[in-house]
Amino acid sequence: MEYSPNKIKNLLDKENFHFKKKFGQNFIVDKNIINNIINKSEIDKETLVIEVGPGAGSLTSELGLKAKNVLAYEIDESIKPILEKNITHNTEIIYKDFLKTNISDDIKKYNYQKLYVIANLPYYITTPIIMKLIEDKVPVDKIVVMVQKEVGDRFKAKPNTKDYNSLSIYLNYYFDIKKLLDVSRNVFLPKPNVDSIVIEFKRKTKKLKLKDEEIFFKLIKDSFRQKRKTIKNNLRQYNLIKIEEILKKHNLDLSVRAESLPIEIFVEIANNL
Image 1 (cartoon, helix red, strand yellow):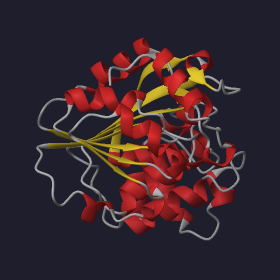
Image 2: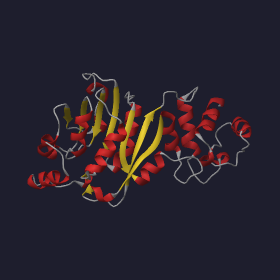
Image 3: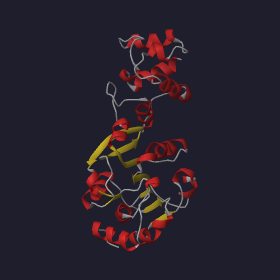
Image 4: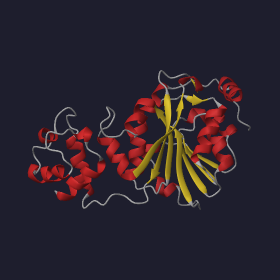
């Protein structure tokens, strides 16, 4: 079926579909935004695209025209009659909770050169979805997701900004992160209370060299435990002499706050510990 916002609305009305708050359902009904996401994602016929939460399939149908294959996960089986009318032949829908799936098993049957995750993510599970992709070691080359603006700002935050936190550093260890576009709340049905942004996570070809990832991730978490406190106060249980050695190399001391330190300094401290 050829996609258009009116056709999506008509399908939803015809099937008497009721939006479910518990699934964070806000469907895109703007052709320009969808085209923008597709173009900026740089999908080609060597790409397997994983989509989480296809909803009525407005983005899904366009992904199917560009990608080699699309594998979409939809938790709400009640939308099946609508979704099935709005997808292309190279698209598979798995009606299951994405957070409970074995993605590596699901993609075994596909041949592809590149693996992308592209989705309009439900706001309430944005971070768990991205964490699952990392923790399950899914070989994703790129993630392009539409998320709540406030959440996206934290993902791409830089040192010395209010949004910079332990998650910013954690994600930046694995990916180069950038904003692709702003999205108004008016392009969704139903309209959410917040605006969105589309963020790209591109897997780093060269990660920073860490001796022990576990120590690094614990260090980051502890450093931001109380954001307004200094490194000295947050890391009292660590070897502060070793930490101070690294900070002095960068003309800093233990009175600095975690929000002022770039990922490279955290890596250096972790390796020194």
